[in-house]
View 1: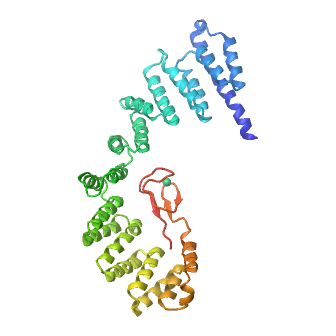
View 2: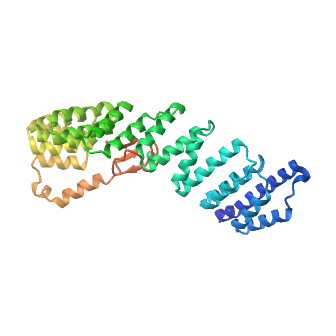
View 3: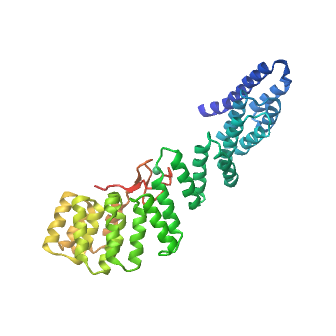
Length: 381
Ligand SMILES: [Zn+2]
């Protein structure tokens, strides 16, 4: 009810803006103003009766464009944008630009609004053309570069995004090095692994942000593919220092390296060390699962018991019962153990530090706020 009332008032608010604009125009130009009031009221009538096409054409005809009235044109365009009528807003901006009376600042401002209108309408090539022109205008360079960056990200044009982000870095206080590194990672992902272009993109990512976990993961996985296991492990181990929140992302590949090297003891020692300085239920689960397969010693059992008592979880208790050989028939029931596993893994275990978005998987760019490198695994302890 309240919304309906507000919605009805919107045209009235815009119309009153037109009225003030028309009065200001008339006052300033005195008797020179030859706009007939009857047309003006006809326009008002159309607006109030929800016939915006007729209203717009009449207003555009009768209202001079000058420093006072241009805001009224913007207000009407903004009203249409809020109502999702992008085409009508674009029509108003185009009409303004056709006026020879616009001064340089007004022209730039209108061009910027028109570019935003095209962006909203999804006409990205036209928006890009206008913004490229506005980049040379000192007052609109920063805003235009930010909009261009948005367009290139949407179109996945990573070379252009890198170029624009570098130009922004020189003007803006925001640090773009992390997202530039991700753009290079995106470029690397478009190349065949181990190709020259792939290696160059990963090197550039790490040179933009030496703590770029994503580039390190790609490098480690590349070495794993080449069966260079010790080098792959040394690469993955760097992640702990780059950003400990991402250690878990490398663990499956690291365990694979140790398995292929037939060095389960090294894997157990690494997981044990992680449980000491970066404990998590996910790591505990890997430790219990691997230990049950490859160890089974009393030392392992007592260590696992200590962890489970310290960090209680259903999965941990199940693992403990398994290695202790308790209730084997019950634990052999896959449906039962599967239900326990899914009960614990159904939680949303990734969250964006920037906007709070939660999900089940890792996104390098947050799907909600578009920030890079801020979606992390939630500490499950
Ligand atoms: Zn976010």
